[in-house]
Image (cartoon, rainbow, N blue to C red):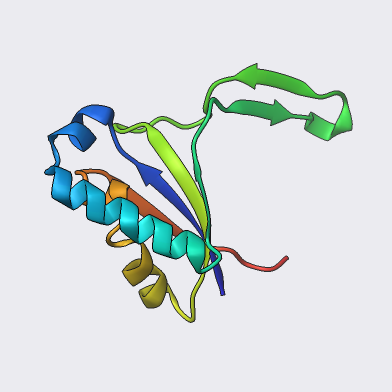
Length: 108
């Protein structure tokens, strides 16, 4: 199964996390990358709409808001959601007072 993960976290919370914890979280990310996980830091989003195929409209900014900014994304493969949770539990957003959402990527 594939999962989309979305990491949320603020710079202030990251900075207040013990350096050794952050270093291990980044080492964990490096191991995930070496295993083939695609990980990226979030840039500035745009919203794309084309209602009824009448013309594309693009607006700057995220559609949804949260208490924490989106920090990054990953596409991971795991046998189950439980395994996916284990894979992301030690990532920087998870350990630095943020949160990681795990979304099953269903085949359409």
